[in-house]
Length: 63
Image (cartoon, rainbow, N blue to C red; front, top):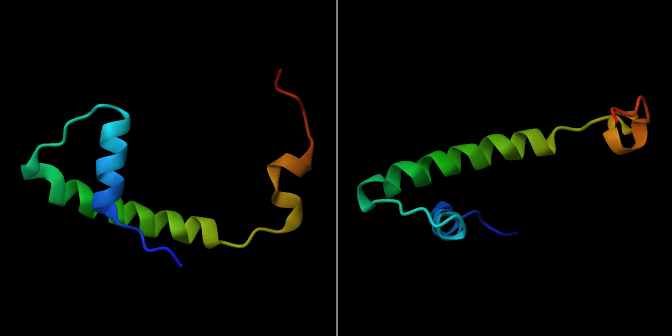
């Protein structure tokens, strides 16, 4: 299993959007990314019944 590295993600994301993150803020930003990762894992791991899959649910076409 891969382990989430908030500093590696911070470096990659900041480079992707050409956003410098000052050294004084790196620890705080990395801590927030770690918190977001934990919250996202809870959401992703939440089981949904099969009809809840929006790609299979059908319904009105918004277009």
